Length: 221
Image 1 (cartoon, rainbow, N blue to C red):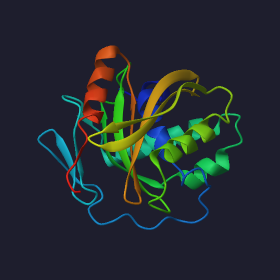
Image 2 (cartoon, rainbow, N blue to C red):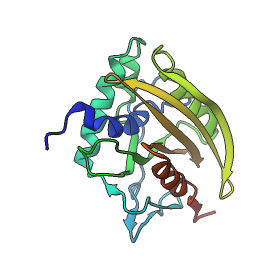
Image 3 (cartoon, helix red, strand yellow):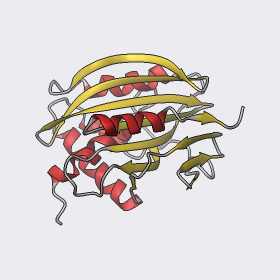
């Protein structure tokens, strides 16, 4: 099956937020420091473990793991769609591309399937450990809302998962002629932001994605 822009849509939007998690809303003007060794972690037996940052997650059951090539294609389409919006953000999006490392990404169905859902985790080096989860989410919100087609559904909220502060928002993004609801979560571990974002095509998929998020556990104090 030929993968069209329409059938890529859920993956495109799921990856798009990784392009804009800038340093607490400040435009990036130079490459960030290299990510630490082992940043990608390991993924086995339904569990993702990141010993470099000291956390683990249970991945969505029976979802499909996306390869690096699939992630790169989705990020490229997502960047194109965001830059096509009338928000004057093309330069900021270009600066943000590559600022965050996607350490794992899953889709409910194989790429090309209609009505897909996506769940992904990213890690980004921030300029200071004083950056808060709310600042990371506010940065993404600010950039997205420069385009009038995008609508904030739920403003930034803060909660704790396994004792860690997470900020989140829900936003509708209009890209490639369609609107999809995206849920975005962020926490901080030392000077690194850890973000989880998801799109869900139905209630069952949303429940599975939320269950995976809330399996987050700190393994190093």
